[in-house]
Length: 159
Image (cartoon, rainbow, N blue to C red; front, side):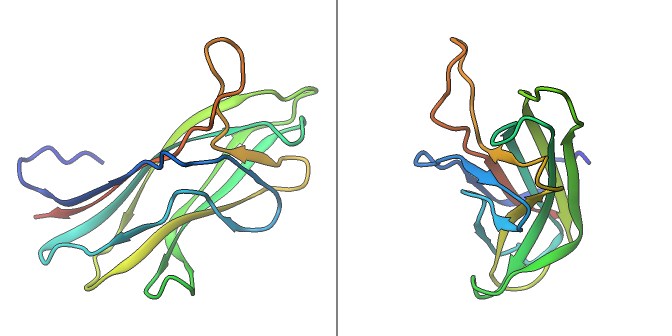
């Protein structure tokens, strides 16, 4: 979905964490590092967009990389609920020696609400043979990087 008419995007919040560290993800649902954003939609919002660019990589195993991703919301930053219609399943299938690195983007569209809410991403692997590392980075010199912090934008759409 693209919004190009001037003045329709309001309340823009972005996040990129310079202290990010990557995170191994297994079969239990966990909060993904550096994805939490506090957001209040504008008074005339018709939608809220949570847009993220991120990386995942093959470690800790070398069989497959499958991520079950979901957007979660909370009013108190302690009790979290999956947002209906805001889930994605991505990755790659079984290979003899999976060493693939993935750079991906996702945009989730939510109905607006009144007041402040917290939004975050959570995920798990499909099974114990498809675990992955959130935010693992690879440098041009074929070495391990410091980590790729997710790039997040949240904003209201009006009109």
